[in-house]
Length: 112
Length: 114
Image 1 (tube, rainbow over the protein chains, first blue to last red):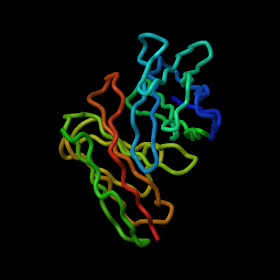
Image 2: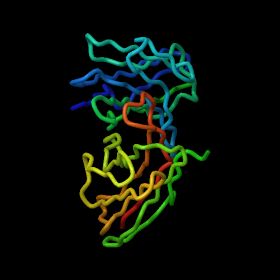
Image 3: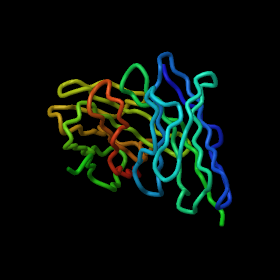
Image 4: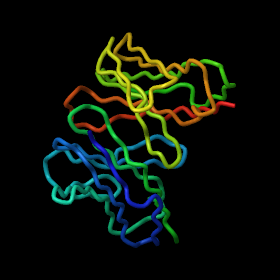
């Protein structure tokens, strides 16, 4: 079975500061890992995905994530936060079946 | 190519009423699924389908029924609505089993049961 733990339900950063959203996963088989973003009152948009190719994955809007098998982590980073990055971010894992299992989400606030 | 279309966008039901949430995709995706989103809970899988005529239960299936008579449509039925089913519902699909793609999500249905 797969599971995802997102550390920190709320993260607050200043505009221009580093964004780091943490995600740890559990999977009995090599996983596919995803980060999604949800802006207020909208659906989910795929930010990036890891599917067993390069361990450093670049996504949209300047985000990237690094797959670390030894740490079972897939943390999301962005060097410099923008006000438009304020949203809720979900980490998700898929392995062994098509079911996508989500973490509980991290709400990112960007302060001017 | 509209992607995944969900209707209605908003709905208010009285306890005990039934209704169907519609989901349609025009991408010829084999796999379709329904999630509910509740604050602090992330998204939880209700039901899913790996192809026409095949459905299975997810993590939170109680109170919901699904069917998949065509590849395109995957409706979610609430048999007797309860306040605990107040939530935002998302339909999502992926091309086929084994695909490395991310899911494509609909824009959601916000349901309130009073």
